[in-house]
Length: 64
Image (tube, rainbow, N blue to C red; front, side, top):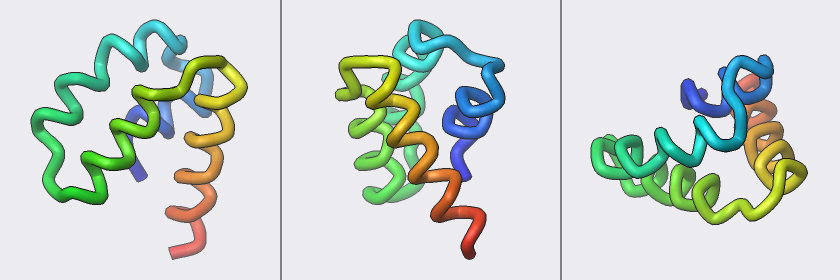
């Protein structure tokens, strides 16, 4: 699970903080899947869209 999704879901990061952190996360992503995930978060245009994406990611990781 990525730290951004975890922190955002726990309400420890705002959407502005997430958007500010993502360029660095994209630059240092360890895999193409990780980079694609960060880019998808970056393209979210609303709070709801970001919540939906982070919820999907944390739910997928919880099932593994």
